[in-house]
Image 1 (cartoon, helix red, strand yellow):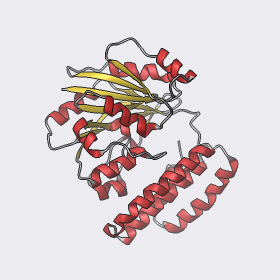
Image 2 (cartoon, helix red, strand yellow):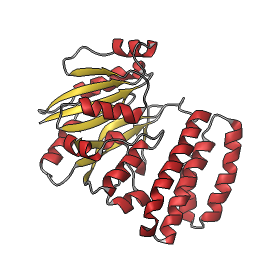
Image 3 (spheres, rainbow, N blue to C red):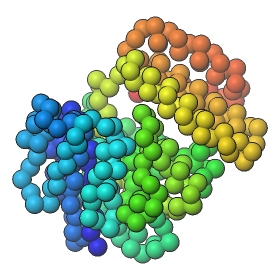
Length: 294
């Protein structure tokens, strides 16, 4: 059996080498390849810097896209190029822990009824300290459970390539691609095992701030997901549907709160007031404030 690790990269050659080396240093007997999908666009300065940053190793395959196409297209192109039986995905500023491949592949080798499996991760703050949070662990279940309570980030997954191909791959939306993809997977009947093992490192950066452009991407993506969900309205109780609306509004409120624009941060107050009017339980209010604290 062979694995393919797909690293999509855009304008971050300084981080890329660390991500690649974490893949090359896997402790496993399974063969694997590392596919670097360069989404900078061919012949750009960023593309040239990225290619120059690649370590020399026969297991590294380099795929430069003609133009910047976004994370979903880049991941799908990498998957189509992959020769492995199992697919893994890694962001260019994160890292796999040494047993990532071995643990997840061995799980799927003994669980033929699963299309893939998800593993937890360690979150590292900009100060280098580990951030302990429930969101570091995957939560899946069936479609309805995931929509209401699910938690999934793309680097968590190991998926059989046959299942990925059958699913059609990632849906091209500006943000929340991982969540939207998992919603489609579960709706289509794909099944996933969940591991509590923390198998990759996710790094947070102090310069990660919400710009007007990224705020627009959030608004577009939330709207697209909400519109897609309406076809399943009858499968949810009134209280559950209200929870979904609350979650969408909270996402927008927190995004505005973290924006670089002062006017956007001020506009978040109206969203928070509406959230207070929708939820009366102390636990909901606590979670809302918890999401604001980094």
